[in-house]
Length: 284
Length: 144
Image (cartoon, rainbow over all chains, first blue to last red; front, top):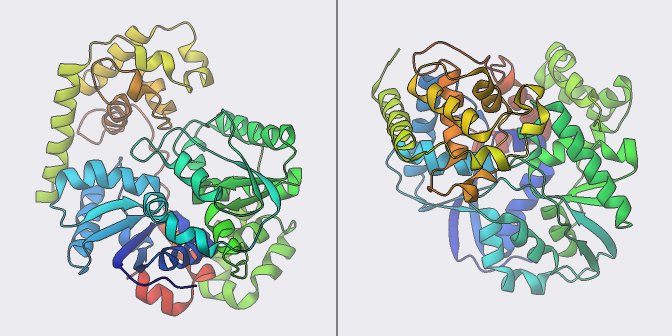
């Protein structure tokens, strides 16, 4: 399953992707499969600072710290996951710091090595899926790259509709609830129109915002890296975030996570800050 | 307000890009016309692209702009559809980001927009999900 290592990179998965450990682990496995060994880096200690438009001192400090870590990482390439981080690196971070590394997005890396990936995709996935796309990641034309990757999967019938949601990912729409609801509604309609019960996301924030459709509309929402690793024959990792989101009542969510893990973050913090997010329904 | 060299560099970067935008933008309004978000506000109904963009340039100049310009700034979700629409090669999406930074009061002017991203639990929640999703060894190796 593992390709010959030809490159070693930093895999910068960002902050909010951490809600989806299954996505991060699968992305690392995919990079490894095409010969790229990665040093994963993410979480608040590697924040790009893009959320700090209201506090430029914090934004500047975060950007400088993260760039310095990458400059001294011993790697000459940083592979991004998050389109916000990628954009911020290409503008504000790169415009104010000396950068001693190349930056590529993971969709570009996987697409450029799809000849290595294709022979590994030996397990058919006989299902029809709709690709969920956004228009906003103009730095990387990731929509056709992901579509090409998904078309490598035997048995998979891919629908790429003539519709892209605004924003670069669903989290960008969260401050405008009516817009996010429209995108959710349109996504459900696209699945219905095309006779599909599966929506494929490219980014973590769409996975987070849409995975509740399993409960509300019977639509399975899955990230493209999960489908690719499944087609490689890897045991599909559990999308725990979706599992928790669709667990229903508080007691079921709590039981699914388990007391040991809840204790690690503190029961009070869990109740006040984590549970409300998981309880929030996917609205349309 | 300016605290250290890195913050100064960020201010300078913002000022350079604002200056370039003010030179290049002709307020033709094509970016506003193509924006998919304008339909989500009654405040923008019936407004022309030219007048709203002129308000954006006002925000960037530090002269407060117009309520409609502040509203369009608030609505921007970075759809990027404005970028190919601009005949002058301005990046209107970046222009709106600079407008947002300015409208938040971050460059020293009056705050025209509330900072909806000022969430004191934002990073702690991310760390909490890390603890729920990653092993201790992964957190130690990947997030320090």
